[in-house]
Length: 56
Image 1 (cartoon, one colour):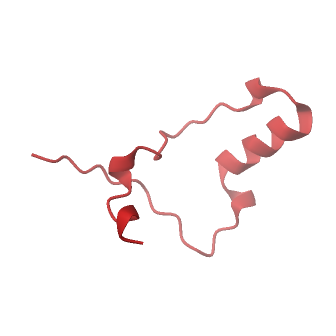
Image 2 (image 1 turned 90 degrees about the vertical axis):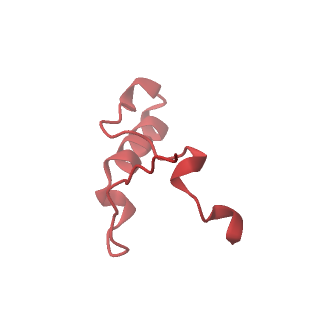
């Protein structure tokens, strides 16, 4: 049995600067302080979140 967890989708009209992750990465790069990156949402980089990635 496969469990599929759905992440909240972000509309294409959303600018990266409006997303918390990119704001925090920018702060880390600007300050060279990795402690500035503290995401509040779970990541979605696990392969099971991208079932169609091999079909590209």
